[in-house]
Amino acid sequence: MSPADPARPRPSPTTATLPFWEAARRHELVVQRCGACGQHRHYPQPMCPACHSLEYAWARCSGRGSIYSYTVCHRAFHPFWKDRVPYVIATIELEEGVRMVCDLPDLLPEQAAIGLPVEVCFDDLDPDLTLPRFRVAR
Image: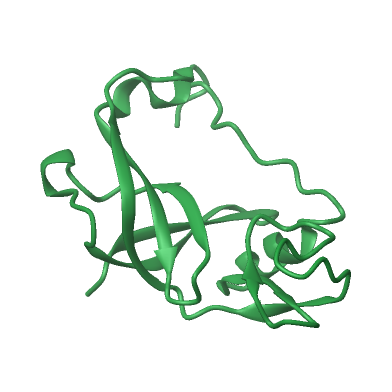
């Protein structure tokens, strides 16, 4: 990236999401798991949407899943993506039952399909931030 290139938008970790981002730096994908009913959940939140328990732990995920839904972005919503259109943004359903939204950087729009198996990969942006992303499963 040259000095004239726009900076990539970055997530802002919070107290609730910090364990997720710390695990990503270790190249691990984690989600919250309810301490009462065992349901996995993502995005991180203080209360289980199923049983309303406030108890949870962070559980490592397999990183495997499939495309639940997707769209092809033809117009960049931020200058960083201006030279990257068209690209695929997908809702990934993990084996654990949770869904995550992510771009699929190595997937051509014509290759995208609901049900396509994917796996997590990690993009080390710098020593402080690693993004979990997905690619077609090998």
